[in-house]
Image (cartoon, rainbow, N blue to C red; front, side):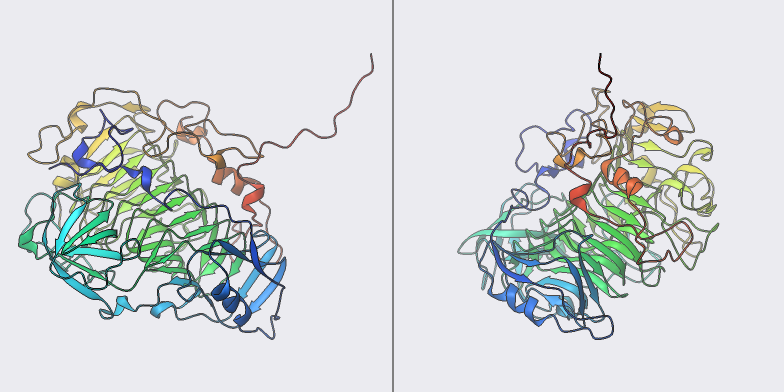
Length: 615
């Protein structure tokens, strides 16, 4: 069965990726784009001090009373808060600073954020995470991919245009079905405990907006993505009160003090833009049971413990979100899925210095981009730069990810790590991935093309382009040949072969399900989700070629063989200066001064110090 193509009759990947293996990613993020708001409802001056922080009561009250579509403005200066700022389920308000190098928020305490404890919280206030506080219904009909009308045996409390439905179903049995096998049983399909990012035993989810209700029929947006929804798995829908919508956090700096940074819980169409976040706790940004939110043009530095649970962006139960044009620095894992999520786009982000205090320097390279939970599927990673894409088997099985035009280095330029230096690691029971038009490896270091189970061992993790079908840890020695035999690869340049691979042997054309026919073209589109070059692409430091990365690109970094140019987030990072208020915790890894408005969407500065000769 084909996955539904929502909103497009043709797709940029037509003729390359089979329709059953991809979706329409063009609708990810805030529907219609982030609005421009110009009316200020309240202006707040700097307050508190490092020795005497204050509660942000005036900010919280200003947000609560601000009319829809207006802005609470924080003037330039330093703010010291003893607790976090909660939007208290108030929709359609923007909290805006004067720029991340001008408006500086310092937090010594958090707000509850329905149990997550964050410095800034956008939430509808329902504690669905605890397993209560929600309504549920049996989902009795309407399972085909692309379906936009489903039948529920209870529609109580569903408000069209405001209620997010979380669709889920029972996991598959502990017997591998040889296809899309949704399972999170420890020792069977994973090496750790199940994630807490979904209801127990129901790790396949999709978060959708109810757009109409007629009797027991609910119209949803978007339509269903996965091809394995079915009555035998007791599918259900569950929901809380109306989602919080249309809130934005813009152009300010957050010193988290080791707290979690920003939480978006049961949110739809919210955004974070132009934010600098320093020293997050477990994560800088957490999205939980939320859909169509955007995280863009921001800079995330460091995590409190820099250990196994230290993330930049963590999505736990979400759909169709957009993480685009951000800098991630000195963080263990830049982008991670902590719970069942589908349809999210991660694009044009720059990650460097994946620091892990436990592993240390010259030890274990941590991956920038990490699928990490059961039930995750159909994400698009496009145009990113980072050391590694690592789909691990820590919490269960995952499917149908697409990697397009990324430079995955297999090396962290900030360190000389020698273990796990792999560009693309896809662990056991992760199947039907698409890897198209990427640049892979670090010239002069990466030596091996692939280790694919059952060849080798799960400890062969040094200087490879691909490590496929092995488990994440030595204690879980379960292999999966389907990881590699269901993998579709086309037009990827790698530094081991020194050429792009258009290899029919790497096209799974003969599979009994979810086969990918041999592509009809070697011409790749610029993007799988954008119609044209985005506005942030123009920078004062130069405008990269569009696209910047791929086998059809020239003039790039020599370590990529010349096929990967610096993307805008990378240019911003390269031209930023160290912030003197934050001594570098590790040599060569300073916190940077950052202002998105000075990096993106700005033409190059005119030349200076010109002289003229009069003829």
